Image (cartoon, rainbow, N blue to C red; front, top):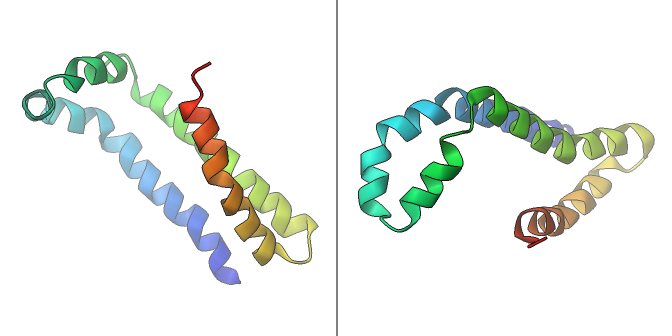
Length: 104
């Protein structure tokens, strides 16, 4: 049951790496991406170029809080946090599917 808290810790380490290296990785691999995805690259660069590191960090913080505040709430206010934790992740694909695939 203590392993429940391993997920938020791993999430933080993974996203710190993305925050630090995102801009440098895109700049380094721009020509490779343009050659590998000639149709998608202009749309992708138009999306990623205006994003600053601080704006990306804000998005990561929003994702972290939306995924982990319910976990914290469940662990504090329920007796069976382990089962509730799994119920939360049963719900997460629907949340992110709606958030990222909603055409409106």
